Every structure is written in structure tokens, then in C-alpha cells.
Length: 543
Image 1 (cartoon, one colour):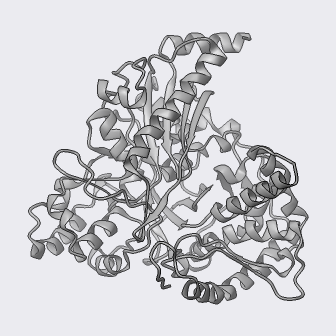
Image 2 (cartoon, rainbow, N blue to C red; image 1 turned 90 degrees about the horizontal axis):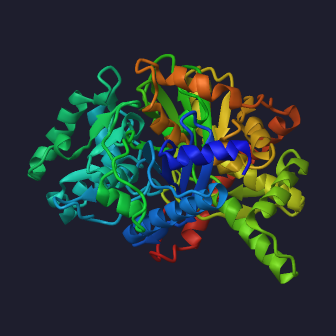
Image 3 (cartoon, helix red, strand yellow; image 1 turned 60 degrees about the vertical axis):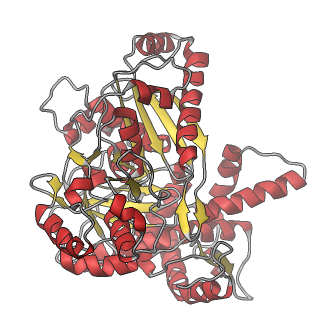
């Protein structure tokens, strides 16, 4: 070991490192960092959502086995790299895919399978709630899933004792505390930006809707407590430590930060929590978070109003479909390679193929790609069928194909941001990229800059993901100056890690505009595909 690793080994052995865990859409990730947020070690475990009975979900058992496998991978890296055992940490935090629906009974039992953010089956609930709450309630939000279950007469709602997100549920199992962080809370139900708690007026309006159903509980009864970034949200219990580390090596007692969604950890990881700052988190889904200087002039169905982990208002443009279809095509190319005798690892495959998109024709050679693996609320789809189409004179090359896939993954996001910039006059000076799309090279950065026509910078830790972001929030618990604000804390520790912004290439930006127009027109093909290709899960489909 070198001198730096010797210091890290001593820090870990003394219990001074900080742990962050994120349950993402395709991987459960763990990040161990120093109190100054320097990454020390990582672990991960792959998992996948499943479409069952028309619902996107994950098996409950996979949550706990995946957490244990992820933590074991982290502990193995610590052992092999530093020669010490990971037995205790100074603080920890849990993040997860935002939104969704976790309904728990009085004994903590899961009443129905976890319903993820990917489900877009709550249109009737949103149509009823939005005018009553005077708030555009997105289909992904926890409250939308709850009210849809009530409208559908699902029997489990009479037994509801706790309402949670995935991150909040895992946090509860680790600490026995029924809480969520501010950003995560703002994806469940509207937040009062002054009190930084559930909006009391809207709680009362929702309870008035509940009254005729005679359920025996109010919304506040089942919602978790809301905690602001920098406040303790419980301590790791013995049972919680065993969930993470069944070997028994991990000790209980570490303080925890409030559990947050991946949107909040993305803002933290990119140091985009001040007004006029913004970030894009790009992975299985893709979304932009723009911290607002002022309220929007009106309600927009395609724009969520949420808050930062410390309570500043944020406009969120969220597209359900990000890189999933691109990932599926690259997996197919890997199979072709194996047939031809070339076995290439995933990282190398991405590193070799993705940069080819930069060499494609500006508009992707006339190709059309629609990346809808699931429904897309911004464009009005409740289901998706990924497709590629072309005219007879389109230029079908590998470079154009990859560019079309990249551009397709950014079209719904662009539609949402157009509402902010065109209709609301929101100024965006620069966006910071975060997530898997920005790993390895500047391809993702340049494609995003072209699609949104905004300079894009990428922090050095962009590929670390939400596990690192929630570890930073856990480290914030340990700050010496208790009055230090989250923006000031991040400026001191992260600002220097952000690379120089890449301005949009005029050629690429003009090409995206042509592709974007083709993509919008091609959504008619997407609707026809949904009708012509029934879902194998349900046998019927509609858009």
C-alpha cells in the first residue's frame, strides 16, 4: 500500500469512514468515503425490475439479498485493498429510486408488491387529485399510487399503517425510524416550502377525499416524518446491521442521514442546490432538476415541483425512459461479438462503441428510434414498445444507429425542458451531468449539450452515482460547523471536482433539432406499435 492507502486503512479501521447505499434501477451500489467525501471503496449488485400483472416491480427478497451482496462486495474491496475489516462507520445514508409505492401494514409487512416509478397506471388518480390539491400530481408519485388503489377498491388500503418509498422503507428496516428526507418527501406529496414539511392545507384536502371511503386513517397517520439534510434520522440498529452484513462484522450505532431519492443525491453529487443551478441525472430514467429563483407562472402537467434536500424549490422534468434501450442494444452487440469469437467486457464494450455516435451524421442519417421500454408521461404514453425505423434512403451505419439511440434517450427530457425555457422563461446557464450515461469519455456530455443546447459540465465523481451522493449527505452530519448550509458545505468539498463545461457543437445541435422533429412525428408509429404488439405480460395494450 502507498502512503495514501495507509491513511485510508487507518481511517476505516478506526470507524471513521462514511457509508452511502443506493438502490438504483439496475444496480444496488455502496460507496465508502472519507469524511471529506473522498471515495475510498465501492461495491455493487445487479438487479432488474420485472413487469408482473401489468406492474413494474422488484421482488421483496431481492431487496435484502441484494443489499447484503452489495455490502459484501464493498467489504471485500476494503479487505483486499486496505488489508482491514470494515466493522463500523462514522455515519451512513440510504438512497433509492425516487417515487413509487411501498404500502406497509401494522407489523411492517408489505401489503402489495413494491410499485416503482416506472408505472404509469395512475392517470385517473392524478386527474382527480390535481384540481383538488391545486398541484400537478405526477403519475409516479406515491400519493398517486395510493389514491389509484383507493379508486380501484384494492382491499389492502384498509390495512395501511405506513406509506413509504423504497429508500424510506430500507431506512426504516435499518433504523426503526419512519422518516424521509425533504427531496424524497417532495416526490410523495406536496411540501410546504416555508415549513419544510407536508403541506397542511393539501393534507386536509386529501383527507376530505378519503372521508367517504371510511378507511379509518388520515394521510398524516401513514406518511413518514420529514427531515431536512444535516439532521440525524436515527441510528443503525443491531437488526439493521445484520440486514446489511449477515456475517455479523458490522457494528450497530452509526448515525444516519435522512433517506433520499436519486434526484436529491444527483443534485448533491453535482453541487447543484443553489438557485439557477441545474443537473441532469441520466440512467435507466433521465431527469433534469432546475433550482428555481421564482415560482412558475402556472401548473404544468409535465413538470414536477419538488425541493432540494435542504428545501429550495426545484422544477423537475422527468422522463421514464433513459438508457435502457441503448443498454439492450449494446448487450445484443456483445452477443454478436461472442459469436464471432470476441469476448469483450461491459466497460470495454461501452468505451469502444459509444464514442462512435460522435462520428455519425448530425441527424443520425435519417434513422428513427423511440426508446420507450415503459410508458412516458411527458408525451402521453402509458406503455412503451422500443422501436427503430428508417426510410429506404436513410443511412444505416453503426455510427448513425448509436447516435439515434443516444438522441432518442434525450427527446422526452428535451420536451420537458422546453416548457421551462420557452413557456416559463427559466434561464439555464449550465447543466451538470451525473450518472451512467457520463461514464468514460465525453460522448454523453456532448450529446446532452447538443440535445438541450446548453453547456454541460461533468464532475469527476459523475460515474460514482447516487451512492456517493448519499454518502456526502451522511458526511454532512459530521460537519464541525453546525450552522454551515448545505450549499456552502458542497462548495467547499465538491466545487473543485467539476470539469470545464462543454458548449453545444452547432453541427450537433442543428442535427438534434432535425432528429427531434422526426422523433415527435414518429410517436404515431409508436402508438401503432403498441396496438400491434401486445405486451407478453398482459396480452393487451393501449396508449
